[in-house]
Length: 380
Ligand SMILES: *Cc1c(COP(=O)(O)O)cnc(C)c1O
Image 1 (tube, rainbow, N blue to C red):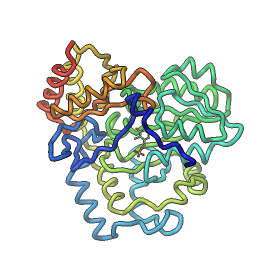
Image 2 (image 1 turned 90 degrees about the horizontal axis):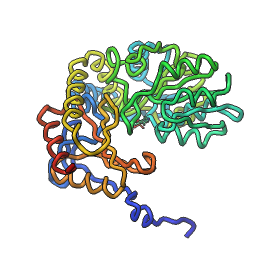
Image 3 (image 1 turned 135 degrees about the horizontal axis):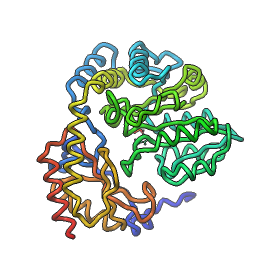
């Protein structure tokens, strides 16, 4: 056999992943094996996955346009509903133009592959998402990682006018924010381009949920490439790249996972459009999420685990050991709370963690219950 398919080493190290089958899931709850749980492992930060406005939009689009886009965008797949979504997204975020992708993973890969060639440089925060790290590793460009949010380390490595700096709005496994004032300054001074992956900031942070740049008061023009996803706070799935009209037209021609992939189905597109309209007015949900986050942080303050300095919906408790993390997650599950057990290579070695995510869909009592279960499962 030409391949080694054995997973026994991963299993012994507590690193084997297994695929759970979930009967039903929302931002607040899930059901599996006939049992109900509170869901503290998802990314449905505003509860939009179950919002009536999105469901109605998807149903109506399915009736009117069918369930498939029929073709890739440049052939005949790009319909009026896609164009409407693009233009409302661009208006909301103050972008000149955007293009849609079926996933954030493919959007990140597409941009880096389409833009960077041999001779270019790519600087990435060490904690950037796997889709960005992998695109960089596969790219002919030279990639350098800088220590997490360390602007001095980045400034020391940077070369003038040589490529692209990429970081995240909100880091997916730590919950802290990138230093966008600092990044914009380094990029401007070195005349390099800057790209933000705002998968976890979009919809949640900033005025009208515009995201991390708005939250930090950084002008959209300082960041040449914006990537956002529809699968987190917007409650659906899919992603976009935003930037200048010139950049977007370039990507229409060179982004291979855009050109060679079937376009987003109309019901999905309609649901995303409804989410974009709803999210701009969702201050109540954003306030509610903030309250739950504060409640959670106060509740777990006395536990013997490091709670990362996160003010967002992502609240990781660092356990360290992989086996212990798995045991704790199993214990929490026994008590009806489903949390993520995140282990290397998703996070650095020795920093295995319970990744607890909160949603506006959670009630005060839900968070109280989680805090109680954590105190019983993690004795000091
Ligand atoms: C989830 C995520 C992605 C990938 O987005 P999908 O649409 O789920 O493929 C990219 N970057 C970050 C930071 C993410 O958290």
